[in-house]
Image 1 (cartoon, rainbow, N blue to C red):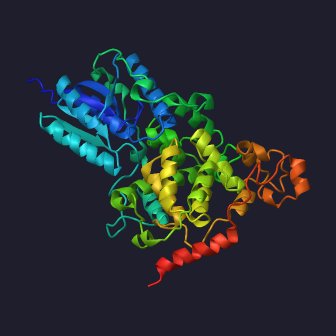
Image 2 (cartoon, rainbow, N blue to C red):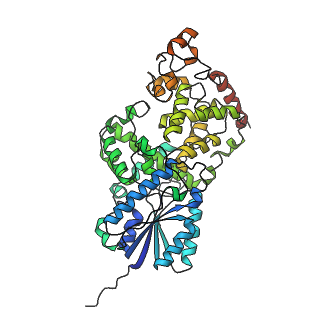
Image 3 (cartoon, helix red, strand yellow):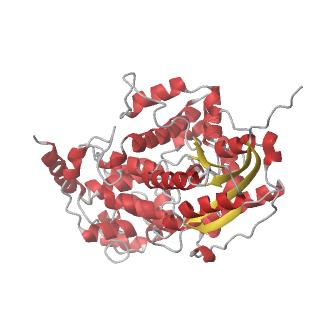
Length: 480
């Protein structure tokens, strides 16, 4: 009997990016299955890093620590991870040529700049007979997988969610096996890894914050969340209690598998798991919007709203950034962001609405600030969230519905627990004044050890008047 020809590639290269794990990994799986020898690489892409304003960037440190763990894990398998720094669009083709690779494997990235980079890499690889294979890994459904019956992209979440859930079955939540194909890993041993300083950054307070990083950190957070997932629907809106999963940064950088998240959520009975699953669907929805409507980067989803005439008072924006607006819940949220790189989802909506509809600052300025500060910054979700709050996006908060920051404070931080955590100057303010400390008399301020206007600012705007002005701004672009 004639021997069956081995049709696998002789050598392949796996390019790790926003998928920093060694399990349930689409590109890694396909490379191991389709090549006889697989090398692994991660690139600290200078085109991305050079655009960052802060050399103390928690995201870069989070990635560095997660890459370090991935490298150690691959070393235990008898292989290694090449960790390089420079322009990925140059490094990947050059490394593939050096290794004699016939194929490079990576997972899809949906951001416009990433698509352009990948197209460039593909063309360069083709010049020396190498092919780029990319796969869906960061979402459950992508691009054209969930469309209306007319074959058009959804622009309203609820019908998208119905179609998404109707399409979901066990196949889409199934993990990509890795262990069965490990023998294809190139036996390279460890490689040196550039330090944080060598790639141009310095340590942050990430370790002091004890934010779990890497695959093991994600696993720990996930196991903790499963113990309280049943209460997620009821607890998720309260920033002062541990109600959410805290997995967003791990889903962002792929240290946790979206398939495992969805598979688990779909298998648990109850409102808590169903509510968390719906949040994961929102994530896919915003990626789909970015894919089908790339103009949302820098522009309103609804073009008429590009004409909104925001006054953009510089002092108001500066006060918002610093957490000095005189509205405690907003200020606590912004200080949490500045100090930790995290902001509770409810507070993201409150802070965004306040900037646009109380301070009358263009939503793009707030979007850019969040992009600079959030550990879990993801273009699709950040843009979607800001356009929702500014009423410029698809299925957005109606333009005439405006969050009252004091009401939000009373509803979701009634005793001021979260406020006091990030505004220590208000630590001794009674709960009945914590949401509006400027309403205290001079004697009440003295008793609380604070003076409004000196230790904590008076409100920078009057909400009712600001709301009226907002309605005028939006009405002006809605008139024929």
